[in-house]
Image (cartoon, rainbow over all chains, first blue to last red; front, side, top):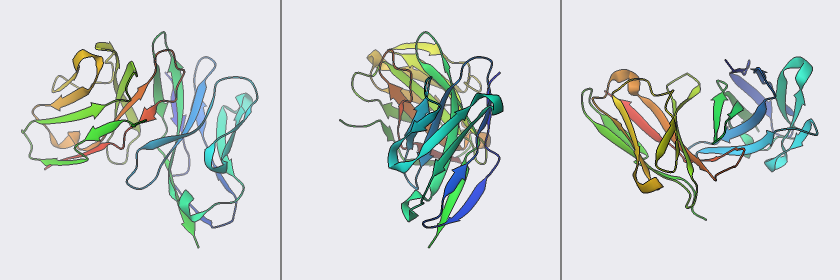
Amino acid sequence: AQSVTQPDIHITVSEGASLELRCNYSYGATPYLFWYVQSPGQGLQLLLKYFSGDTLVQGIKGFEAEFKRSQSSFNLRKPSVHWSDAAEYFCAVGQLKAAGNKLTFGGGTRVLVKP
Amino acid sequence: EAGVTQFPSHSVIEKGQTVTLRCDPISGHDNLYWYRRVMGKEIKFLLHFVKESKQDESGMPNNRFLAERTGGTYSTLKVQPAELEDSGVYFCASSQAGTRGGYTFGSGTRLTVV
């Protein structure tokens, strides 16, 4: 069975500092990996996704993630955090089937941005 | 393009009552998904529709939960009777046929059973 672990439940970072959120997955085949963000009062928004090819993936809002097969990781990074990045971030792995894509989510990491 | 719409945004009901959540997917999206996040836990898959057919309902917790998708358009998720452990945020998402995801999520319905 597939699973996703986000080891950090909470992270506090100063505005302008760099941010890295960890994600480890367990999946029997080539994973389809995603990062979503949920801002207060909002739904889940897709930041970026990895299916194949270049292991460094660029997303929206200045985020990027790197797929490392040897470490079963897909960590999310941002070089300089803005106050609006305070949110909860979810890593997910997808099980591609003939019709549709069922996701397994990690527990989420809540990011607090200090001024 | 309108996004995925869910309502109500919040619902507070008493144990034993019935609640119906509604999801309007993006027009033309054949795939519709329901997920749930119980307090402090991961977001968990409930079920997946392709048009009006249930493709995968392996995540439905028990027979108190009933999902329908009328004519392949909007979907409802009924909980009857509601129990305390059903409290959480229920998310709906949709995607086009053949997409490899990620799909578009709604803002969720927060259900509180007291």
